[in-house]
Length: 306
Ligand SMILES: C[S@@+](CC[C@H](N)C(=O)[O-])C[C@H]1O[C@@H](n2cnc3c(N)ncnc32)[C@H](O)[C@@H]1O
Image (cartoon, rainbow, N blue to C red; front, side, top):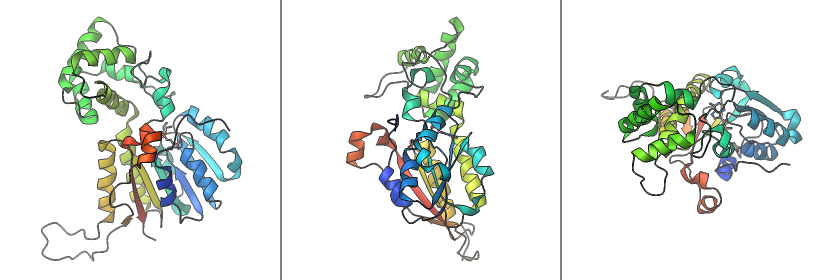
């Protein structure tokens, strides 16, 4: 088997979350290089997999990697917000999403995610028609400032937006290297992180509609309520984690009476299930040593009622 260009994060914690599941369909919303899916299929001979990814390259790699389980897998190309809507949730017993980009996407210079890239792309799906170059060269200063603030929590959002607009008046910005330089010339470096980190995150989220994708997935799960289904979601920054945390809290709430109500009149039984992780699980020191990407990973797990 080809070695994987991506190490799965929190693998043991994910396997533990699903350990009691014996049969049914396991949905991997972010198949990537099948790091999680391979181990889950190996450990659960009664499970079938539906694997989704919008990156063709990742799907092709995983198709080969999962060949030993050929009869048990269905792979779907597309965004999980759309693809999960097509799934019959009757038999879904487990669902995983490991949000964000893969190491290969981040590290491949031609994909335009890294500060060294000669392109300005950042599309997870190479067939999509909207890229980082469109955001950087066509958004108004106000639009840029808004996404930098909202998706990157960039304190000097206005300053960076103005610097980009000034630079593009001279010449279209066509590579990530140049963009990173403009940002580095505008804001001060704090600590070890590159000053462009948060701005790049914001552009990536905008290009791939990453937060809308998560909200849509949560909406679908709320609507489908897979019976006894275990949902494991891995996030990598506070914007993602907040969405998952708040939704799991809502689903776990038994009483839905208005906050000022004198006494409970709703039956105190309105929860859709229970949170299996009161606090998110994070990487242990061993994993932190071997996989730097695990540093910011948080796993939250929810189990729907039967
Ligand atoms: C962090 S990687 C997943 C790695 C995988 N768990 C493994 O162990 O190999 C995220 C993957 O999800 C895909 N992805 C991210 N957001 C997506 C979305 N909204 N729809 C479909 N695929 C998505 C990316 O293309 C990437 O391949």
